[in-house]
Length: 416
Ligand SMILES: Cc1ncc(COP(=O)(O)O)c(C=O)c1O
Image 1: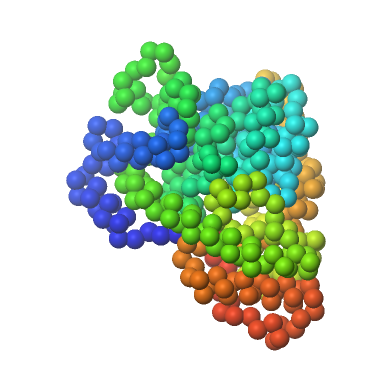
Image 2: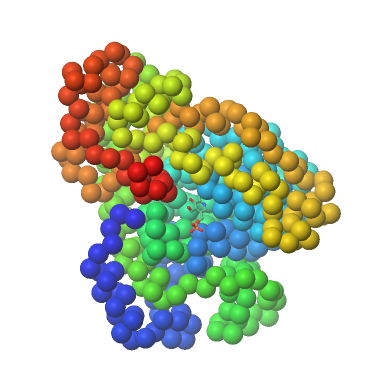
């Protein structure tokens, strides 16, 4: 969340005053947002849902994934990427990330087995996955690609918006995301049938309101319908997103330029798959060791990617424990159809990812940073690098106006 203000209050009170809180037949906000966001993305369909988790499940149901299917997911993402695979009865197979902090295409290709049906590239921290390589692998191995763009609202890959490159895309509009209505999400897709199935997964009764689609029979599912309050808020947020992303891209460029010379101290900019198009919600640096990263963040308020407490596969308790559902007969790990899928995990299975994560440092960008703030950040990164790696004393470093890390940006409790 970057800005929530009078425009949102006005939009919400307009909806409350009219009493038009339900999306079908009563209000227009969700319909309007879906049409506007689809146009913004450059995709045929966008279906709003109650959350990004619901959106992932709806996209996977839409694409027909289920028991007997393995889905490749990265070792670093929010656990919903994994649990959504389990929610459709399939098995998540965890593969390494590379230094970009996104799924490593080489690891994807190496992990493909006869039951592998799909891959979920996650545009983690708003940074782009290597979509050219992933789409190439998917084409050669007949895999479905579901882009988890929950952290990638407003960003893209080489001129295309996230969520429009694979077979489906998923977004989150929860409190922590670039565009927010408190909680929310949605599915982007070009294919009419997949869209219809995703809408049925989001609201199994949607045909009451939309009319029956004789080509696609409805099926049972759990409800995740959005409210008009969400739609109203998102319509306001959509007006702001491009300006905010542009400001963060400019800040990232300035910081990368201002810190480039620190490379020789060991502070190396993290490789990016689409530097000019991603969300630029953070500048990342890949340090030589975990120890170097710890020393740096002690001085400069920033976050070690591996230490957020919830985004590494080692922290996904239900997945590691094989607790794939509440009822044992619905637990994909115990389903006969999944007997030939890889169903075991260990905490050290993606050691390379953990090593990268523990030496990658994230510096948060903000559309609210002034030129003076950006100047201070550049100065302080340099000073912190000299203190951490070149023996400069803290007093001589003359750190300026150090502000606490924006913990909200990393889904971390304040003060973490
Ligand atoms: C990468 C990723 N995937 C999925 C989700 C799930 O989204 P939601 O919290 O809206 O259910 C999130 C949310 O934090 C996320 O960051």
